[in-house]
Image (cartoon, rainbow, N blue to C red):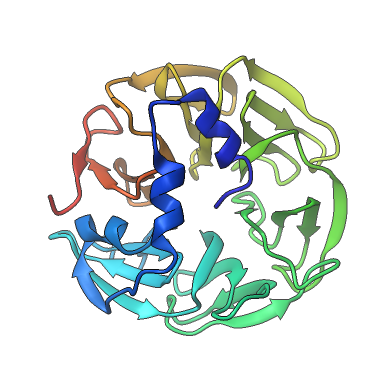
Length: 292
């Protein structure tokens, strides 16, 4: 579970996702199933649009990596076990980055796949590792710059081969996202709001206070998306970081992960705290269950 999500649940006492997630870990997971059934067997830790075939979605879970077709059929393509910090390499369509845990326990360090998720290798254990980056992001301004959260913020300038500690993490961190404009700029979603750092994460300045933010994601054109509890799905441009609400009809759903199609910014996917996968084709205004 992402750091901070347990405390995030305190803001939504009517939700029961902590109970739901705690029952998933011991269930057997099938090789193939419907995407709508994933939540009965595992929970989701990351999403990415398959850049070799944008009609498909890559779904990183507690029990491996799935490829999901537009009809909602999900196929298990790799078993690392517990994928965390899952993110695509923006410079290479076949390359993916992740961290997490192998079957049987322990940490994986910083791992990468060069065959679109089928096989994985450790590139580096990280500082004080092997690390388990629950939050990780790659700079779209400089794809060799990678940030990961493991007790403190760590940074790599050589695509994950070597790492250094940058500074303390924002309090109650939930998610981080690197800027598309400047490799030194980072955004943080926390239980208390939304913050930005202009110096590689050494210092942070609040953009929004007073409400939990469950994720943040930045796309290549500098558009950022987030979900603010009590407000809804929002977006802003990096040049003007004032969030505007895109949709607020979410009921008791809390999106935790977002993937935007690089070839069509209006096509996007979210995974919620209950591991529902939703799709939008109008830039986030309306959402439907994928394959539902």
